[in-house]
Image (cartoon, rainbow, N blue to C red; front, top):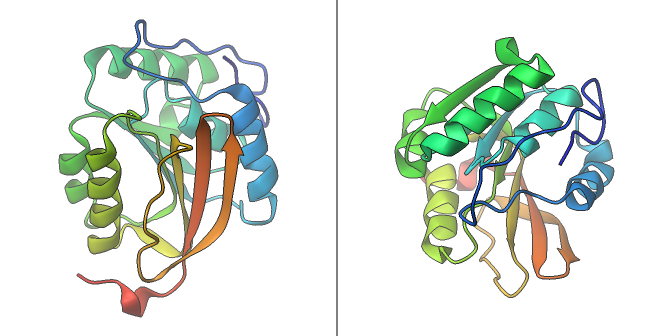
Length: 188
C-alpha cells in the first residue's frame, strides 16, 4: 500500500495487522481522485474509521490543508501516527483515538470539505449512524463531499439536502459520493 499521487507519491504505508481492517485498495483510491478532479481543491478532510490513514494521507498529499483521522483501535492509532510521520505531515494532521459517534459529536464547531467514511462492511448500523450524525451536526460545508466506501450489495438512502455525484463499483466494494447541496434542508 502506498500514496498514489501528489507530494507524497510513492511513500509506502503500513496497515494494521489482522483482519479487523480492510485498507482501501490503491486502484480504488486512484479512481476516486480521478472522479474528484473537478471537485477537489484544498479544504479539510475527516478520515472516519481511518484504519491505516491511507485515505486522509492521500487527500493531504494532493493538496488538502488539514486532515483529522478517527479510529477507536489502539493499533490503528499507532499505524496512522507512524504513516503520518513517514509522509512528514504531522503539522497538517490530528489523530483521534475514539468512538466514531463521540468523534462526530465532538466536531460541532468544525465543518469539513470532505468526509471519507469506511466502516467495517458488516456494521451497517455504523454507516447509518454516521450518515445521520454528519447530517444532524452539519459537519459538511456547502458543496462538501461525503465519500462512503461500502459493500456493493449495500445501498443507503440519500439524505435530504444531498445529491449523488457518483456511485462506482469495484467488485464487492463500491464508492458512493454525495454532495451537500442545500443547508436549509438539514435538520439540526
